[in-house]
Image 1 (tube, one colour):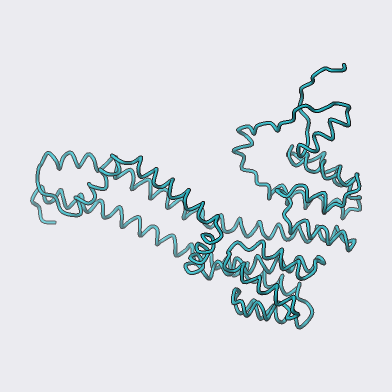
Image 2 (image 1 turned 60 degrees about the vertical axis):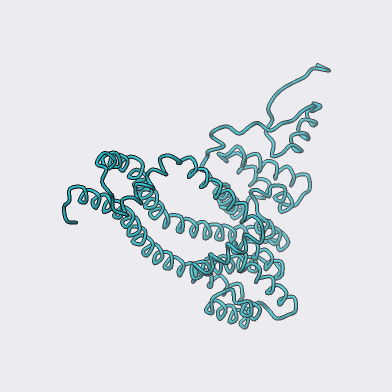
Length: 387
């Protein structure tokens, strides 16, 4: 009925898409607002990276089976379990049917599809090998996910050790020691210095726990803000490189080599591939050195020599890249470099964790041992027994 105000919900990737859909139905939109995220959405553990990998795997399989792109996307929209993913696929399909290219349609959803992904899709479209590029993208995403999962799983046990040890120390200081403090105060005897230190720490923690928690939260917030600033991020990355240089260089070498090799193999021009590969490097000290490599490549020096001059990557990786350039198989050699350093990284992580675990156990044991011994010293001094 004309002039009637209608309220309802419409599925759309963004506000613009929602407006277009409403106008196509003859409705004039007065107000559009995204629904607030529910508890399930806020605290979901599902990662957008997992959606991207599943989308790439399924689309690659459908295109490989001979289905056209629009029909493949339509199938994916129907079978996707994620409402958000369904909306994105439908929006992408709509853009393609309106005459947009697949890569341009993906550009409208930067939160899910990173620049490297879109550039590889664009290269596949230009070369008429979209199914091949999607297959390589699938391999790339799976390798990246496998490496991240390995690092995450390796650090679970050390994290549990730190948590358990910290809780034990806090429990001793806040619940156990105060009982001894009352006994020692009633005795009125002079206590050994270690006991005084432990009891002072216990008293401070019980009286000013809110200051400790507040200081910890404030320090964490200030730290996060500091590393968001380019200069702060650079200093933090420099420190990490000094402390864990071997592991970080292997991580960044594997990441850079796999990204660059996949891009070149997919038909992306070298300079564009270098710029995209720089974006995947997390450590700013190493990332800034890649700028010199791009400059050298523009001057016709290739990438092996500028990489060697930058000094960012290990000697073995540089030698393999140089051989790849000389033989005209740079993409193949870069992927071999990535595989080599991913295997080496797993060994390095195992060694680091095997050192970290006993070091943390020893540290926690020393702290708890110091607390226990200081209490025993006080007890022995009160009873006048030799310690």
